[in-house]
Length: 375
Length: 151
Image (cartoon, chains in turn blue, cyan):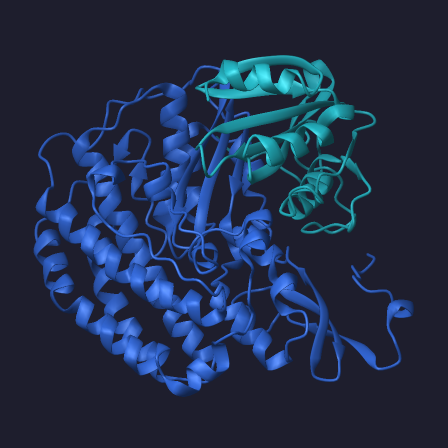
């Protein structure tokens, strides 16, 4: 089998060399290889090489019935399974013309926002380790564990929740869930303040991330970068506000954005987003409506022929599902648009001319998840 | 902008073979030769600054592969789905990766998954798959060790 090579040896000048970072490199957060064209310690050019854990989920989906596809959608982004569930469910529901009851939509929002906080906390922990700070992980995992316990009460699973069904959610909120979430939210903002002071506002951390890995606004849009990475570059685009879904129009929250587009701004936005998510969770608990949690979906789902693209704002950006129906009980084609895929494609734009130690700081600030790139 | 208005506007700029409205989104089939000029026009003049993704659909019964470009406008919140019909035997279309940079990776993925050639692509090599697997997302793909999953 021929090896993929991004740079031909002839292209290199006499000072340059090729360095292969990964696939088993801890700072790539999974199995990702990056080919670096180096001049001493400086990155001249780079080429990400994903695909080491490709699991052909899109092909599997074509051979499964509509409801059987749902558990596969958990597996792409294991840090926020609900956002992929939601994108797929919204696409199929739109094809079927199914209306989700209010309580079901509310529970979806609660689970999605809990996932966002869980994902951002894990990013906070992992980024600390990337940067040589071991303290954040102990704090972040303590908070994350509380949320995982709550979600486990609701869905039975800790990571790949499989919480949603076509038409609504599987389970109603169990006894003690709302109390537990209220207890968690009581101190959460103080915790975020503390973490921010401890790590993000630390002088050493600022020196390593400020004006490192700058992504310009027009590049971010052209590369399809989404989520906190886009908002750090001065765009206040958030699908929860821009194209509300699942009842997000009923909640009041701010879209966090920054100006400079450097690594530090991306960190700052995630910390602010956790506060906003906590605020959405408080509103969602206070206004939780009574009623059905799921619409009556037929046992065998056969949507009318056509295509539908549904998108949601995941923790990393625009999570989308393009579902094409041919009128049978299996989808004709499912395409998942994963935010990390597009975010990683812009890496070269941020990294030209940086030192190799900064490359780790930039990659960590992008918050990529490899299984959703490979799918 | 309604679907009809959008269709009228792009009809003046490109050869539209066929079009339909699918759940409120315009699906326009464009001649491969006018794809690039249409996308440039839509990006610069109609405000479609955003390409969500680019992918393909295999239609063996019509002997075509459809390349699908999903566009979105962050200012007017309009969506549009531009499709190009290609022959299954010689699937070839010009790259749009210089118009929307995000298409570079999406086209590489579509190329290896569906066996499409994107002309003038800056990095035509595989992105995700190894070179020994050819076009697995085509409907008639059969790999050596591929087994049907139980229902």
